[in-house]
Amino acid sequence: MSHDPTGEGAQTDFRSAMSYGDYLDLASVLGAQHPRSNDHNEMLFIVQHQTSELWMKLMLHELRAALHRIRADDLPSAFKMLARVSRIMEQLVHAWDVLSTMTPSEYSHLRPHLGSSSGFQSWQYREIEFLLGNKNAAMLKPHGHEPELVEHLERALGAPSLYDETLLLLVRRGFDHDRSQRDWRAPYEASSVVESAWMTIYRAPEQYWSLYELAEELVDLEDAFRQWRFRHVTTVERIIGFKRGTGGTAGVSYLRRMLDVVLFPELWTVRTAL
Ligand code: HEM
View 1: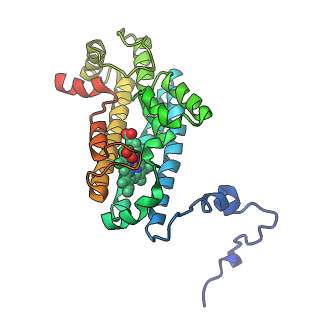
View 2: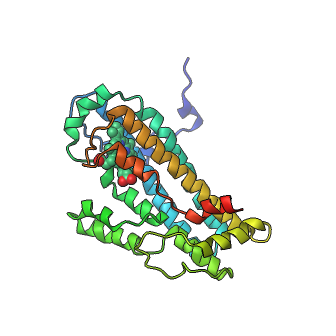
View 3: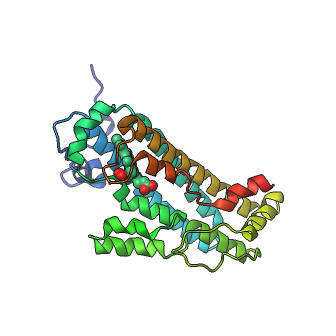
């Protein structure tokens, strides 16, 4: 005879109690998949993008909080949040394994239904890039038709990034350098003075343990982000080859250029100099 868990007291009457679906608003979340074709594979395409956006939402939540914690000199809390962001990014790296089961023939059935929509227009992704320090005002252009969104992204573009906040922390900890005042909207340019500061820290980790730990958290994060970019471009190449993207860029060659982005440059160059 099958076991009836209600005998152990499992709740079954939700006329006035909050259920799992109520708490998670599953009616909205699971009602938000609207395939535009009858193609079997479109559901994979939609769910993969939507779940990525949900994880990005959590990443932004953690990143914004980590920035505040660093500004408040509360590094242990920031470490916890940054570690979580790296794990989310790693999870998204593994998610490409699911999408890579889609063949070029399968994608070509969907392609006409995608119009000019593309991850290139993901505003959460752009905000993550701005928070991490890849500042580029041109990336606001695809959002020109949504002024509130532009305003929101402008705020992230014009504020110190995670790396800027880290370098301001270095100043508070006695490492004077030439990047504590700069145009936050501009792309970050590497500085030999900042590299020397990191050099001092990496040469005496036990003396500067929390700064050393922060540096390694940032490297973990950039490492995971690089892997995400790499799996994206490789998956894209196996699905569409060198065709143009739905967003209008040259496709794989654009994405390959993005592999050259370096978020925390001196944390990489210091390794050669050490
Ligand atoms: C069949 C699957 C996919 C293909 C063929 C594809 C293709 C592309 C291409 C060609 C671009 C360059 C912009 C353009 O011209 O469209 C791009 C950008 C982008 N895609 Fe994908 N993509 C796929 C899946 C995904 C998924 C699952 C995500 C997760 C959210 C994603 C997120 C992004 C983001 C954020 C960008 C902007 C990258 C940047 O500007 O650095 N893509 N994609």
